[in-house]
Image (cartoon, rainbow, N blue to C red):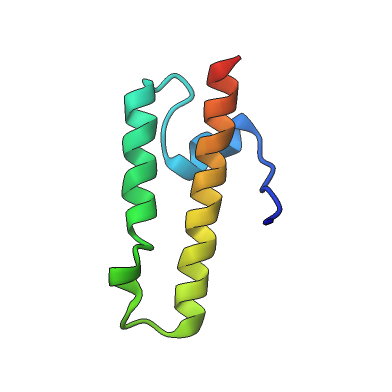
Length: 74
């Protein structure tokens, strides 16, 4: 199992490029757009190092989304 990436709500908003008061639909759309940048079809022509960087970024985006989701569920 992978370690979870801890971050604050403000950090999550910055990473997803949304305001803290953004509607949930905007948060979901921002996450989808950012994660799509690391889709395997887009990574084929990149160096292994760059692929790893983009995958790590996708994990951070997903962690930010999870943080915002957890706070929203409270």
